[in-house]
Length: 83
Image (cartoon, rainbow, N blue to C red; front, side):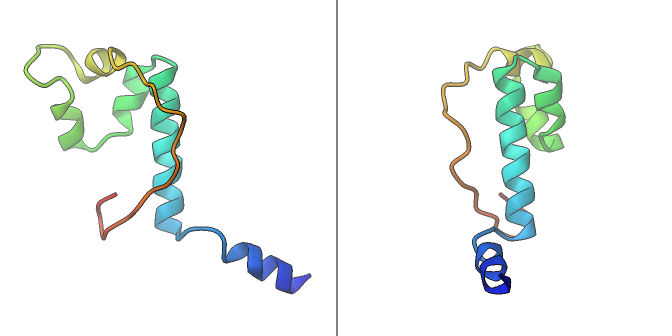
């Protein structure tokens, strides 16, 4: 039984990868649900300020216009403090 538990534990990602995967999945879910404010809240300050681009729209309104076409998060990679 212990061997099975250890084998399964080896299949999970690092704590950082797991957190990033959870955040990415949450972002995609909020985006798909049209909850721009919640999706924007998951972004970094720099990303949040970049979303509106050259428009005068808020992040929440601009991101609500994104039409998510993906099927979900297939994987993540973490490099130091970037993912």
